[in-house]
Amino acid sequence: MSIQIYGIPNCGTCKKAFKWLQENGVDYEFINTKETPPTREMIKNWVKSLGSAPMRNTSGQSYRALGDEKKTWTDEQWIEAFTKDAMLLKRPLFLKDGTAVLVGFKDKDEVVRQKLGL
Image (tube, rainbow, N blue to C red; front, top):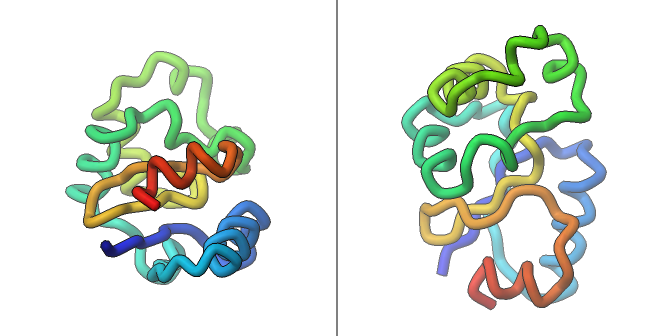
């Protein structure tokens, strides 16, 4: 089983996820989206798995800087926006065996375990 986490190292929610994974003995690979932004194809697959709404970092400056038209955007428009600015992506984003399975880190332990296949 391969778990990858996309995010940024100074993100509090990412740090919380890293700590939980370490405490639970889960190996993972961290990908810093500032240094290695995801490709359009990757984002398209993530949106296919999770939907664009849960992937939106609605508390970030990049999101707030978008106009009101963002409320009516299609998944395709969100894919384009995520591709141009990875800071629009909610963090952390978890992949299991190459498939996006979880975004954010607010779920209960059992939900996280189920989604990560633990």
